[in-house]
Image (cartoon, rainbow, N blue to C red; front, side):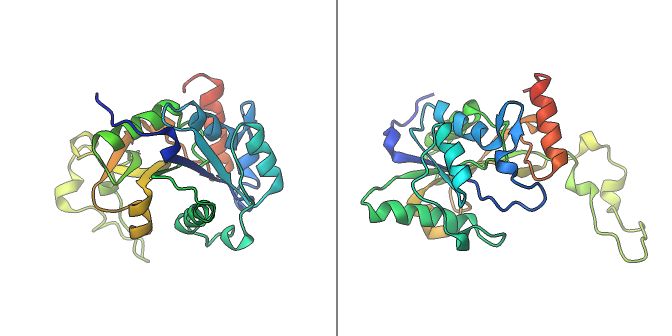
Length: 238
């Protein structure tokens, strides 16, 4: 595969890690196997053949200290106004881009790596960037196959009736006869910065999916998710 050559300084990897998680308190620094959750994403980014600049965006001095311990840069502490439940990824990333622009530092591409996807590794990051450059894409977003087809899903009316739960053309099909559906897994988002700013996010024309195996696609939001990831790591499944 011929890959378009780009300077390592063209790519900025961003790992957002605010301290105010509600369902799993301080999940971003909770010890997974033998290191803080955030460290898994930092180390994966630093092992990528494409990435040199890895920054963590956080509002916490403790998180910043841990991030730098594992090799990430923390150029500043994120403002509290960008660290609550309503803060969007776009606003956080725009704030980072503006910060560097004020210092006359620019990048061409961003790679967003959520710290809640610890099983995503450098191989996945490199494959996603390979795809990004091969396709000359504006963005690449990681997905995995849905564990259960959404065609088997529906809303339940107040009376609990199941009469119309499945359309007639679906109800007699086996699961293996259904088309494959994919979902966002939150592990990797890549974009050209100019287009990211124009479309205010990663969904835009000339976007492509990077398909990951479900076992690597755990997104840690609850203690249950955390225990599953820990089990997979400790037993050598990933």
